[in-house]
Image 1 (cartoon, helix red, strand yellow):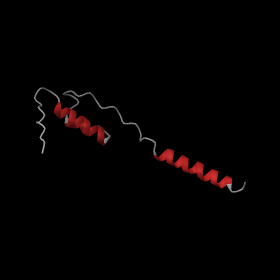
Image 2: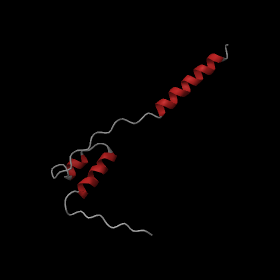
Image 3: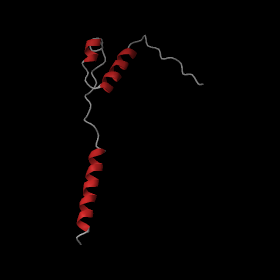
Amino acid sequence: MITKRPALLTLAVLVATLISACSPETPKKEMPAVNDENCKPEKIAQVEDKGTREQFASACLRRGPGFQPSPKKEW
């Protein structure tokens, strides 16, 4: 019976480590509304999260009637 306790403790530590290692990162802040005021470079630079900032800048560049995506090419 003495050998079961260390094995149980080791199993509990392993499970706790795996659960904490797989937990999601801190939640991202919501992306600001895409409009003329928010799409200025100063406002884009104020977005802290890099992924959100890149997504927001991309949305700013694609807004309006002037954006036309390039045709897909199959190589």
